[in-house]
Amino acid sequence: MRMSPFSFALPRRHRRMLPATPVRGAGESPVTATKPKGPIPLRTIMAFSLATAPVGALSTPLLVNLPPYYAGLLGLSLSAVGLIFGAVKLLDIFVDPAIGMLMDRTRTRLGRYRVWLIASAPILMIGTWKLFFAGPGVSEVYLFLWLTLMYIGFSMLVLSQVAWGAVLTDDYDERSKVYAFGAVTGVLGGVLALLLPILMGKEGAEAIQLMGWIILLTVPITTLIVTIATPETIRPSLHADRASLKDFPRLIAHPAMRRLLLADLLFTVGPAITSPLYLFFMKQARGYTEAEAFIMLILFSLAGLFGAPIWAWSAMKLGKHRSLILAAVLYAVCQAVLPLLPSKSFWLLAPGMFVAGGILSAFAFLVRAMVADVGDQVRLETGKDRIGILYSLVTSTAKIGSALAVAIALPLLAAFGFSAAPDATNTPEALMGLLLLYTVPPVTLVLLAAWAIRGYALGRAEHDEIRGALATRDAEAMAAAGTPAG
Image 1 (cartoon, rainbow, N blue to C red):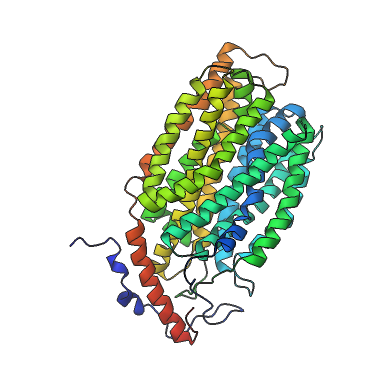
Image 2 (tube, rainbow, N blue to C red):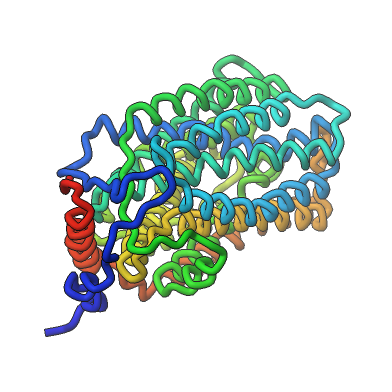
């Protein structure tokens, strides 16, 4: 009989790892873990997923609307805007690991991740106000400082939400459902931010400010609902040590995590290259009006409402890693074909954009569901809960990818001689450079991401074995502490 790669993780071995006396953290009971009973109620998943609504409402304007707004209407240079957005995201690489490490150290009566979600709201709202309501005459320093603050709040919100999702359930398939619902709610937030300005006839600065108001309203409302309506499980640790910088190299080198980090980086930077180029490409290279371009962007975003549940179903049938590889191949085909469709062929391109958006919805939520499984494996191997750090690594790679996308795309576009001025007429060579940038890097990088996922070995059977070993060990830890199971 073939031995499972996780056959080392039998409960007998880990009984020897249990402490003689329960480990206490500051201000907590000896063991505060409770094991979720049965499937998570749908109302709980829906309430929890609301945390991603402001994330979605902010993500698209950050990549698609704000760079052209600052480079066009507010008068900053195209290269300066690209470098500032890239530099802030690169600085954010250090912010996410710091937040993740602090999350893993956090012990409060309210829970570990709940307090971070609450704290993110005012920081994110201040940064949003300053960025979306800026007027002509702002400087590069202004953009850099307020973009940095906004990203700090954004990091706190995203990390607390994805880490909280990992402890909401320990079931392989339910995790796909939890993160798929989060993807759907994020899409709704993004569509709301894009659609309202069109429905209200707002353009330019007025459209940007309306997007800002949407974000400012959704952040406090969704934070309140999530923190009240969602339970948080605190899982027991076998060791009293606190998360530290020493954890990072070990977790980065972990075989499963190593593949996920590389894949997530490539899954991000490839498609993200198209984001700051989108309006330029649709309007100048393909001759669509701004309204048509936004309609197709809305269709592209709305596709996630249908795509995420389909990919969650696929993950239950094929496994998360196989579904991720399939999505990568399909996206590469779409991205290669769509830019080659005839100009001004709205009724051809719009359905294609919808299909591409549905495929793209698989990447982020499946990777994050897989990281939760890796977190269980790490906890079994080491006795340490390092979910915060694991997710900080993933969000860091995603931000590196976004930073590289903007920092590469806009300066290269300028190098092709492309002008971002609203009344500019670009040369055929500049438009050809735009077409190449919009097509070749996304296709190449996404296929490389699929290659990185090959050989990923933490499927459903392996995770079920890990889950069983953890359940036995946690029950023994609670019994030793005198805490009733469940």
